[in-house]
Structure formats: C-alpha cells, structure tokens
Image 1: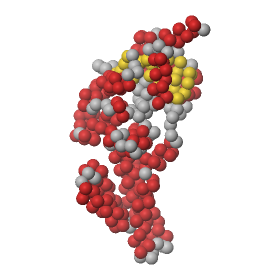
Image 2: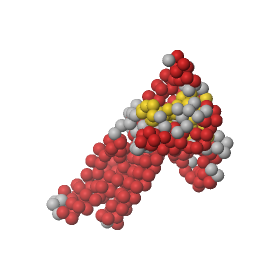
Image 3: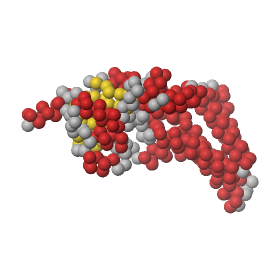
Image 4: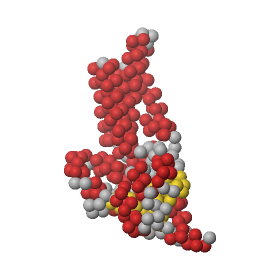
Length: 337
C-alpha cells in the first residue's frame, strides 16, 4: 500500500486550460477583445494566421492582457489541483494557449509547478502536446485533465484520464483508448442557457408591432396577423443577435458586474464559438423575415438594428441620449407595425 501511494505521488497531474481549468477559450476571448477595441486589425490578423497558429497566438497575446482574476474557472478542477499539491504531487498547466496568457493564469492561481504552452513556432496541441508530455514525464507518468476530442491522443499515453465537461460522445472514445479516472461536470442546461442568452423575455417589447393593427381593428384579418407575426419574429431575431454580439464584446465588463457576470458567455455556460456563429445567423434570419414582410418594414428593421448597435457601443453612457434612444426604439417598433 505504501509503495502504491509513493507511485501515485510520483505521477504528475497535468491540467489543460481552455475548456478545462477555465470554462472559456482564452484565445477566442482575446481575439474578440482585440477586435472590439481595434476592428481595423481584422485584415492584419488574417495575415498573422497565415504564418501559423503559434505566430497568431503570439501576436494576439502581445496586444491583449488576460484578466486571470475574473476568468470563469471550473471549481472542481481547482479543487483537484489543490488536492494534488497537498498530496505532494507536481501539478502542471499544459495548454495550446499562448505562453504569456498561460503564465498569467498560473501566476494568479499559484497552483502550478510548471507551465507548458505554445511558444516560438510550436503550437502545443494534439500530438505535439502528447509528445512533449511523454518526453518530460514518460509514458503513463502523468494523469491528464482535458475536455476535447483533441485530448484523446494525450489520454492514450497518460496513466489516467480526467474528463471535464466533456464533449458529447467523448466518454466512449476514452474507454477505447485510456483509463478513465473521473468525470467532472458542472454545466447548466444547454437549452436554458441559450434561452437566457437570447433574452427571450425581452421579446415581449416587440409585441408593439401588433399595436397599429389592433388600433385599426384589422387584427382579425389573418393576412395582417401573419405579417405582424413575421415582423415580431424578425425584430426578436435581430434584437437577440445584438444581445449576443454585445455579450461577446463585453466579457471583461460583464464579469465585473454582480449580475451580468452570470450571463452565459461571461460565466462560461456557452462556448464563445457558438456565439460567433449565432449572431450572424440570427441577423440574416431576422433581415430575411423583414424583407418577407415588406421592403419598407426591412428598412425600419435596419434602422432598429443600427440604433441598437449605436446605443450599445456609444450612446448608453450618455445620460440624456440614453433615455432618448430607448424611447426611439419603442417608437421604431410601432412604426414597424
């Protein structure tokens, strides 16, 4: 028994960062923050990416500091690392994130004996990460905590696999190629998180498009009712698209707010990549529905979109304009009707 315990103490605990230790993707957050501040860098960023992922990560990390104190960490993974340290085990942070960002997280938490991350021209992911860990700690010389399919090749050379909020079907893949130690999950309901993110409760405001039809006593006409219904859905889709865009760009600010820090993207309940795909999809759907109602309504919808974007980015901090713009949004909804 004592010999087994000594062997366990000699086995390194290796923890991944994105999606495992932190319930977010540090690179995606950094790119969004950089584009939010300096959108003109979008084209140069494509050039960085063409030079390789390692170069891209380095360039982004040079321009964006990670607010390690406010990242949404996985409480069970923090506890796992703390327990390993208490047992006298070495704990290592191994990540494909840029070394500068990984070091910032490690310095803040104070839990890691070593940091292995993307540096120079080497993007430390998949086979490269597996090879580096075997080179340093030997095959089966470490336990590995991860969350993604890319980690399968690492688990195959690890002693034990620790799954953290695993992707669907990942558990079955583990059983075929590695020894599963434990599964750590703390995810909220996906559907509930999507509904919260879209602010479905805010759609009630868009019922104002029905008001002119009610006032004109034509709401009983099914064609009028159908067009009002399409207008309602169009406004709701565009409004939700703006909510998603705002939350993606305001992650740092939201995490400093006692209530907004619980929003799905800020809290890590939804992947940022989903938001990046969802916002344009909602926008296209909303505008398509708007044109289906009528070209004139589509123009009103575009005016609503531009006004909400202007409010979110520039006007909500100006007291008098703040009230005026909010009032105008209600007026635009009625004009749309």
